[in-house]
Length: 212
Image (cartoon, rainbow, N blue to C red):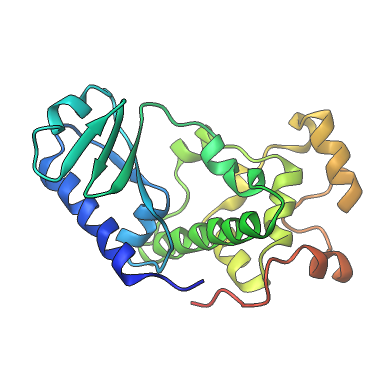
């Protein structure tokens, strides 16, 4: 997926404007976050996590920012303000629509995860205790992630501690266990269980490997 340099420039200018003028601490996440850190990623909005949503009012008077109907934008770039974050943002990969657009977004989600894994590895870090406690992945969805990545990029996730996010088999919901059993042997480790080659090829998103 090619990256529009003009759109990318708009996103980065928006992030820098937030850094310079935002009246509170915030966490940048989503596509804009990986783009800001150097990853070539298509995105058209900026997602930030903040404490008070009232910051919208204080930014209305800052040049370039506009606030309307509870939404904030900077020079046409929509800024999504969230005051809480939960595992929906980890689960977005497998909540995408089952169409061509959804498949492209799934691929972008996985490329983002691999990109962050590479940054962690480069800095000598692993998935933190806080992340491991906050974000959990069921066995079935962990298997889906593996089936949709080629071995080398998937190994990047393993190298930074993906297994810390996976819920133990006995703690998975009945639905998760049923879906998992359709793809692999019940009770096995989704990160290491042998994969059927035909099944792997059926699930793999696209035919371009994610390279270093």
